Every structure is written in C-alpha cells, then in structure tokens.
Amino acid sequence: MAIWHDASCFFGGAFLSNAIPHYVSGVMGRAFQSPFAKPHGKGLSSSTVNVLWGFANMVFAYLLLVRDGGFDIRSVEQATSAGLGILLMGLLAAHLFGPLHGGRSPRTGSA
Image 1 (tube, rainbow, N blue to C red):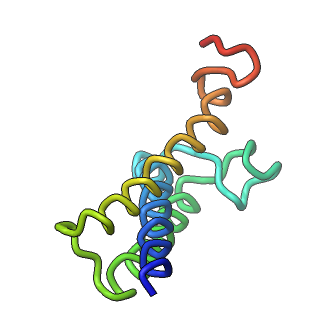
Image 2 (tube, one colour):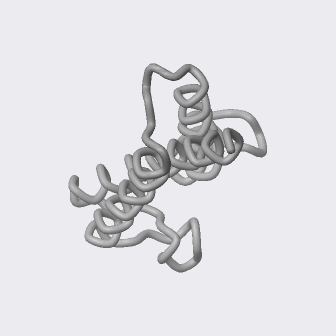
C-alpha cells in the first residue's frame, strides 16, 4: 500500500508544481501555454483559461496529497515523494517551455 501512497504524493507534487505557472500567469493577465492551446504545448491560451487550468491542477494536487490518506509534511518519505514530483515537473516545464520564453535551448545548450 505504501507504493500507492508514495505515487499519490509524487503526482500530487507534480500537479502542484504545474498549477503555479498557469495560475500566476493567468492572474497576471498573461497568456501562457496550456493543453487547450493550438498547437498543443506551443500555442498560447488566454489568462482566463490558465487561471481555470491552474485551479484544476490545485484541486488534483489536493485530492492526491490530502484526500489520499492525508499528507504529513513531517514524514520524510511523503515529503521526498512530493518534492521529487515538484522537482521533476519543474525540470520538465523548464525544458519544454524554456526555448519558448528565452530560456536555455535544448538543442544547442545555450541561452
């Protein structure tokens, strides 16, 4: 049963990490990539869509972290699983969206 709880913490952390750029971009009134844009992952969605998508990600994170047995920040195992989800989703987002926003290019390795 512990593996399922660790997986829930990991994916809850990933959804929490994904919520941040969408929600923040949306409340700042800026367009940002979302799964609903065309082309997927490169096109921009409106700020309203990003607020809604960011909020949905927060709900998913809550369901996975809190409702699935109760997340305990004092548990090293649970905090590590959630932290890895946050870190890996952040690295994936940086890799995918960095080239679109002036970040490091995955092909050349330069800024």
